[in-house]
Length: 381
Image 1 (cartoon, rainbow, N blue to C red):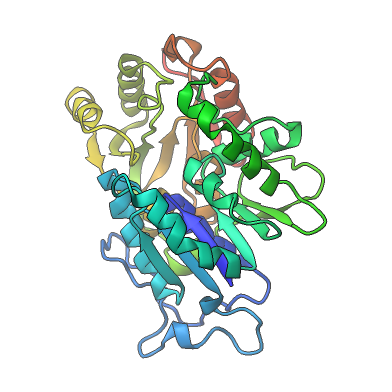
Image 2 (cartoon, rainbow, N blue to C red):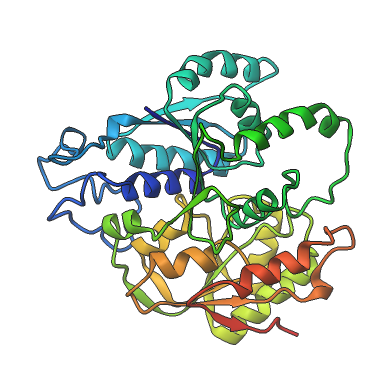
């Protein structure tokens, strides 16, 4: 059995991509209808032609069946993430996979109850799939396993930093953190150390990174390319509209970019490129989004699925504008062959907040500089 732990909609999407890309995975069913452009239901484009039960037909002669994967959702607390995760969980169940919704943060006793309930599943699993190696919750779960094969699927651009830190033998720290060691960090330091050992290949443990990001893995780590084949087989092609759409980012919420500078930059991009819609990141605050709507005139869209699926389902603008983020790597793959142009706008140094991590500018420049099949835009004055 393969056991996956996810905490965000994008992680669950990439678990589905990983399962689809595995040797012996069920082939794409012929005659699957494309998702109609603009449809807002779960879709169930890709669940199979009328009268077909996808869960009962994993593919003749293959060694892989949907029943071999169980996805555990370690549910977050913010409503937007929970809503998108529930939609993604529906899609995973439609594919035939088992999804267990775990209220891992539902009160003081939730972590202990979660560990107690998931312990037997961890011991039975042959492979553990995780979406966020920086997550304290996931790190705690990893301390309960020893000689299990591990797969890390993309959790956005954080995958680039994870692989780099693993290769350099460094402790696992998110790129936008300043690295201060408070009481909580000191208490959890042994957990992080043990988790890092579990994420290092050994004679009895294989480690795989399934990613659409450009990474240089350390010796012994296998990298498998995520080409978004599942997304392209289940959704689209989209209807393409005139003008441009703009993709939001949570760089303000994570303390990296000054909010005033961000709002001004969004307005300048919208005016220059004729953007009319702003696809909000699930972590963006309601206050910031209200300000953007008032000051820029953009229509604010709160997606109910990861943007790769929203864009592939359509309608989508002929140009998609973004700041440095995961989508400058993933959207060109999800939208391959559609003619949609993805353009990325650099973050100017003066936009950064005084308290931003010293690594922020270099990391964001690396995200932009390594993106393929995108157009580079200078930061608006």
